[in-house]
Image 1 (cartoon, protein in one colour):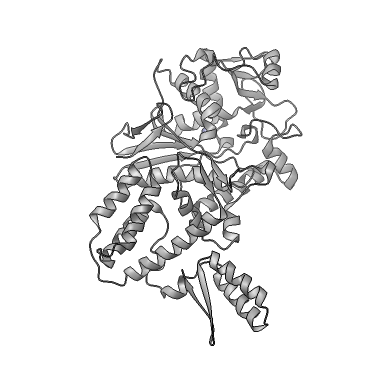
Image 2 (tube, protein in one colour):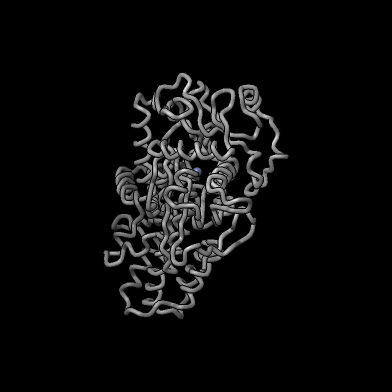
Amino acid sequence: MLRLTDTQTKSVRELAPATPGRLTVYACGPTVYRDAHVGNLRTFLLSDLIRRTAESRSLRVHLVMNITDVGHLADDTSLDATGEDKLLAQARREDKSPFAIARFYEQGFHHDLALLNIRPADAYPRASEWIESMIGLISRLVDAGHAYVGGDGTVYFAAQSYEAYGGLSGNRLSDLRAGHREDAEALTAGKRFHADWALWKLAGTAREMVWDSPWGRGFPGWHIECSAMSLDLIGPVIDLHTGGIDLRFPHHEDERAQSNCAVGGGAGAEVVRHWVHGEHLLFEGRKMAKSTGNVVLLSDVVARGHDPLSLRLAFLSSRYRQQANLSWDAIAAADGLLMRWRTAVAAWAEHPSAALSGDYSAAVLDAFEDDLDTPRALQSLRRLEKDASVAEGTKFETFAWADALLGLDLARLVGQPVVAAALPAGAAELLDERAAARAGKDYAASDRLRDELATLGVAVKDTPAGQEWSVT
Ligand SMILES: [Zn+2]
């Protein structure tokens, strides 16, 4: 059975579904006013790995992932420099309606997920289509004394009304100080306690993405979105909630307070049975941020001639709960390994069929179930690849079986003329360019192109008959 690091207890816990045979998962999804960068994509891979591992034990997985398409709910708590929210700001920049922007980036998000073999969730509720339910939930919290209308007309959640606040992140109310300027301003404006957060804000001068409510025309706060959707689409018992580590506080702490109070199960009652968070991803040693220009998209990986699944393999090379440092070299290396394995799997498929290796398949599944130890699973497969005592037919069966967990399309080249197909994406063009450079006696360009091909894992040799290449 799958074991995962539980944020709340800080221990590795077995994931036992409340209803035997059925695992319910809620995953915080994208904010759709820009493309997801590779760090976001690594987080979205987490629920896919959990799903694949659970399904290998015949669990039925029900996964819900929200789409934050209301800009006011953006995860960046600070507003744009102009004071405008980010979705509206992006809409203005692109001269489109905010909904057109949201749909455009939502489509891009699904496209990226498909390229990464991340299976679609069972439901993708949009925040903009869930307003009525959020209003209903806020009303219930007000009626139960967990929320109040502040002097500024904003509806706030009363943090002190929930005794177990801080249980997820360790940020107890007594430790939280009213440090921010905005906090101080909100306090004078009508918030009763500095750690209270907005459930409904008045529209003010905003005209777009605002809705009528019992408290006036306005828009919901960010955290209430996930409480409303998860309670509606999964119910008051949710086996697992995933998200990036940056969402642990305040987003998930606040969501937990809202959901637990809405369900009214009393102290100790928890709607979410397991919270699991994916760690940060650095790129070339630096945090990914638009402000420093260090943002890498899946389209950048593809533009460099890499198979999109080389990114997935690069992600699998580190564990979800560890901060990882991705680099172009690591992606290129993953691309090389991916091509090598696909070529090998195609070659093994030509041999007499043989049974799956029980030892190696058990080792791979054990690694996945041990808190998604994907690096260990990959090591087992590297060992199998080189193990001369195992028949080729068995290697083929075992790699094909493991691919249900890995999602790397390892059998893609089976039945194809292997050598021709084994050339990595972009290499054929470089080979043509190099042939032209040599024909034109441009040896500097020819050498540069040979180096470029080497980074793709293609070795080139010059012979009297022209250049010859092999995949390394
Ligand atoms: Zn969320």
